[in-house]
Length: 254
Image (cartoon, rainbow, N blue to C red):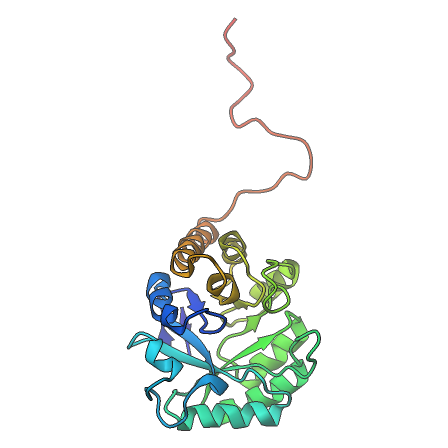
């Protein structure tokens, strides 16, 4: 998988929020084999990328940071947060989140596209979070997005792949990596997303709120590997009705 010129082997992205103890972030990232870890900029100590007490201290060295603009309500706020993250030493990758509706927590496609276009022009590798809408996805691709992160279900809900049919459309129509984000609550949900042809899965709440986060991270990793292999193998056809014998109905013993 190539994003912004970087070749990635790990197809599980993990987050750093909702853990009962920030000390779990490192073990989870290692258990997941995660090469990309997201962090909300508002949780970063801007005095330095590895300042004492910073959440960044918990992330394994060599891991690619994906700062997100969580909390941004407008394109302008998202742009400012992304610039702050880069100045703080978090790199030039950014996950754009623009959410102006505090009740439903759904991304604003228009504002997201504006922020994506502005930041892509400034040399950022932009991964926007979006509703899986084909027209919004096309606008984001045209704006310079390096990958797309459509939601599987409402953020933090753990309800699974409720937007399955729409994500399938994005996989088929958009020539960018599709990273399913938000709402994925079980390894089986992640496996299903990969079977559709998604390039990767982002998991935070499902892992962070598990009884054993590190073990859940391993389960997600294995499920994603299985789903990817199934996609590459080419799943068999599905019958609309009835059944079909796997062996010829001939040569029975008398």
